[in-house]
Image (cartoon, rainbow, N blue to C red):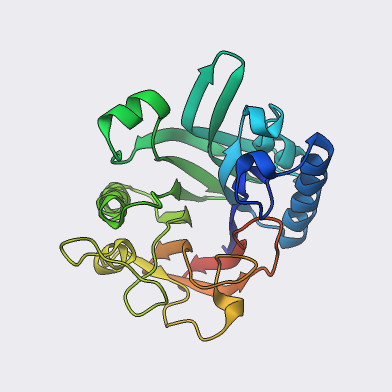
Length: 269
């Protein structure tokens, strides 16, 4: 049962602009989303995890990007999970992660990840993840769509430990997919917390997951961020140890500051 999985941090549809307010007018943003949808159709993934997706944000003209891309790219099943849900007078910020699937999704649940601070969580939200079960024929796979903190490896390590706990307790094979904002020791721009721990290394050391690339990348084509001048791998698809990568591709696109990743995976025979 091969399963094609893709991940893409779409950067709120702003392209490679640094600010979410600088992504162009409504027509420019929608045209970019149409290009992203075309790329998604070409990748033809069975299941897709999107990060930095706007559900109702002023800077993206209140367009639900998850629903828009699902319709344009041909995904009948959509689950949304919000990291931030704030309205101040006329301004709105509602964004987070989404899972798009060609197969039925059940048992979708939001998972709270460690927050940067209590006051920030109360006022503006924090990183969260979403778990859901994907029914592929007779096989059920638990997918965890996630976007980890960009500011703190310590938070990423604690979040990774939580993901390991969820995976090891699941009755279904579990795949973690998304922008983890971490790169393992030995890779370009790897970071550790004050105890010398690293989030990807935490997932590796669990004994549950395997990843690609598993060796230090030697070409720009294997790096996922920044799409214009790539320097590191921070977008990951982690599969169970008894599964295998049949193919793995980093798409050379500059429709976001991240590059999308698509892979075919399957249980080992």
